[in-house]
Image 1: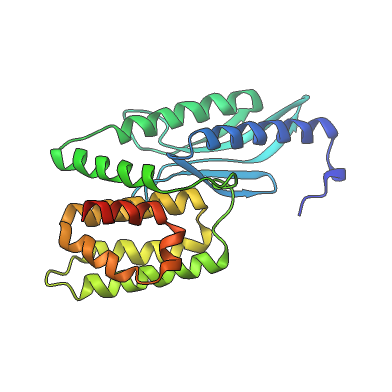
Image 2: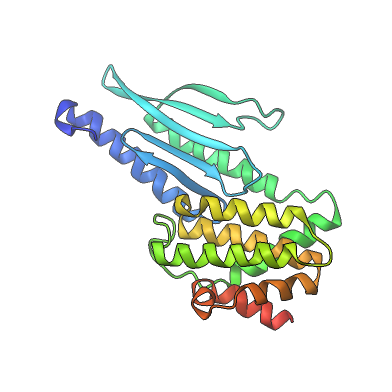
Length: 237
C-alpha cells in the first residue's frame, strides 16, 4: 500500500491524472482491451483476445526536474515486428502511445485471412451484442462469487457434454477450461468477451454442439448470468 505523504504532491497529482486518463480510455475501448493489473504505481492493460500476448504496461514513475517519467513496456510497438519495447516516457506521452497501441490491436482484429476468420468474427460479435451487460462497473469488477460459481458449473457441464459428443473437439474443451480457471481474475466485460468467443467457436462447429450447450445450461440461474447469449442460442435452434 502506497503512503501518499511520502511523495511530493505534484508527483502524485501527475500520476493520478495519467492513471485516470488511462482508465477512461480503456473503458471506451472495453470490447478490445482490459486492465489486468491496477495497483500502486502500475497499470497493465492487455488485449482481450485470449490468444494474444499484446500488452501495455506503465510502472515505476520517477520524478526528475519537475517532470514525471514512467517506464513503458509495450507489445507490439511497431507494425513491422512483434518485439517488445521498454523505455521511459514522460507523462504527457503515455496516452498518445496507448491510443496508438489500441489502433494496432484494432487493425489486427480486422485481419481476415480466410473466410472462416470472417465467419468466426461475425459469430463472436453477434453473441457479444446479445449479452445483456448493463452494469456500470462491468469494466472494473468481476462477477460476484455466486455468479462465478454458476458460470464455473456451466463450464464444467459444457466440458462433460462436449466430451460425450460423438465427435470430441479438444479445442472447445480447452477453451472452456481456460475460461473457468480465469473467471476470478476477469472483469464482467472480459468474462462476456471470453464467453462470446466460446459460443462462437461452438456455433462454428455446428448446431449439434449448440444443443450440447443448452443441455449444459440446465440451471436457470446460470442462464440469468448470461441470459442474452442463451436467448440467441435458443433462437438459432
